[in-house]
Length: 51
Image (cartoon, rainbow, N blue to C red; front, side, top):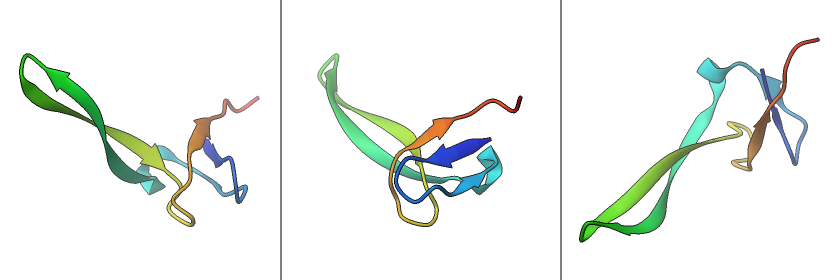
């Protein structure tokens, strides 16, 4: 389960949105990382464990 840090959306990993972030260069080539985000507002999400 994931929870948005801004709008309190919660959901599973299959519902997440994604964005690509530039991380500099690696061996002369651009390095990009795909990160999860909230599908509702596009903000960062955190992984929460079900208790």
